[in-house]
Image (cartoon, rainbow, N blue to C red; front, side, top):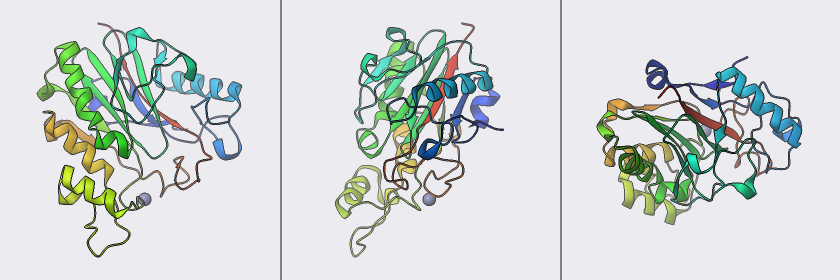
Length: 255
Ligand SMILES: [Zn+2]
């Protein structure tokens, strides 16, 4: 059984990475079955086993460094933290984690946008919901990789993973207007005369990456709407908050 989706661009570059799916794990009920968060009410032993299953399937050699995600714009360095299994109390509050030396980094999502970036001998995992997208966290992660790893955005590779699609993401008129102002008219439906506009987070994240200097041909959209496909994905909105979390991960090795 396939435990995760991969990016064609990152695979071609030989990078171990993935966007986990919801099946193939041992959790039950609303967390069925590959839930990768210990802070959503699931059995901790099951979450631990799910992490082991994922690591084995992905051939990961080390730990996965994650952050306590807060829908902000902080970027942290994974060398400061190597936590497995994840324990929220020990994790820094941040929404992008950089791997600047051997090791894997990850972010947890259920509707929010996961972004994986390869930058030479460094990498980043980024979590962007509407708040993080508004704060351009993806672009900030690119600039952090530039600053900390001396990487050129023109040579980076970025994969935007499964998230809630425009098809399912109804937002307030105010939010639609805000995102159209930030990212252009394609970002959301025009709220003028449309009481239920839809927001395109994927598009906004891609704009953020483009503005930070990553070329369009080096950005891949890995398809999937988390809300549409209940067989493949957990969805915070569809499942009314009681659901599991996916993990998007990327590993740097053999430096
Ligand atoms: Zn959808």
